Length: 249
Image (cartoon, rainbow, N blue to C red; front, side, top):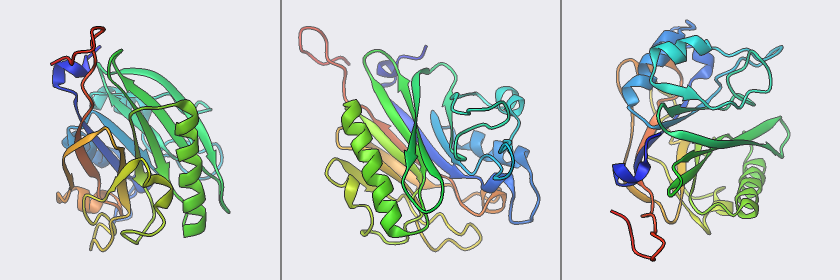
């Protein structure tokens, strides 16, 4: 197990809507998605649209491809044998980091949506990662964020990040349910990858987290692999407290 404290509490988080691994050239190429994911050098990655929409919703990326071609473990969120995630949301965690638990959260709306929660870290420093792909209409997005915020309050989660495709074109509207305890960050324009016009993909960091850096992967490969560009941020978790009340590190 990697002790986050030994890394000075620093983690790289990333989010990527992979459009079921279909690129702008209309080819389904999971290997290309894997290359983009590996280049992000992240500790935790939330993926959206990882599973196909029909039937049993099989994953667009084979599990063994992730297991053998990346340094990630798959958070066990799927409720069947063929999906990688739930409601299309999957989370990959760097091997060595401990996954302490997962959870599923049904979200309100006109269309079926769900959020996933994966708790990662060590005994002293844990982070709850909530992966989302919010709805297309702002009233439903507000209701979905309110449901997530209430869920985290009930769970009494001290440090959390909500990350994914927020589907919100405005820089200030529609995000109100999170603003009491989260800093919502758009690292840059991530959609459409051919000509980025909007920062639909975002991070919402709980207030104890320190953002160190953030950006959008605008590599040549990323610009064709999906209709979204991946986003990333480097964050630092709060220092762990010793039993005597002093800080570590």
